[in-house]
Length: 130
Image 1 (tube, rainbow, N blue to C red):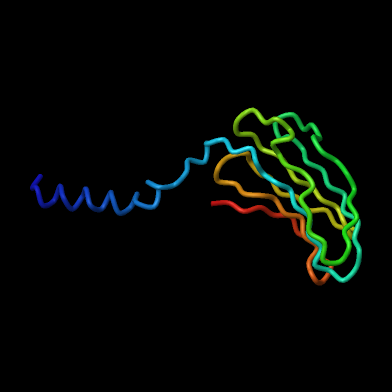
Image 2: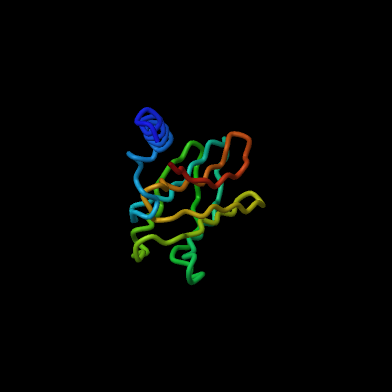
């Protein structure tokens, strides 16, 4: 193989993988994950929240919270469940006759989890991911 071709192949591989070189591996443990409640609606809302460990189906947190209009608060952190490295947790919220959920992992790619009542009274449960 000519040196020019080797250089082009090497450059192509480098460009394809360049975005991954600085990325944090998804299996790197990061247990500091907050669960936050937000109420963007103009009425008070009761939110039933459960955090369930994926491997055992154990409820590690369960509580009903009353959120006034405009309220935002952190109510739980996954580090309180003492996860063993990277684990998955289901965040389940019920409010206004609806139930939603998301699954979050205690790895460096997952951010905090959010339970939001939007301005129209809809329920959303989500988390950020890299």
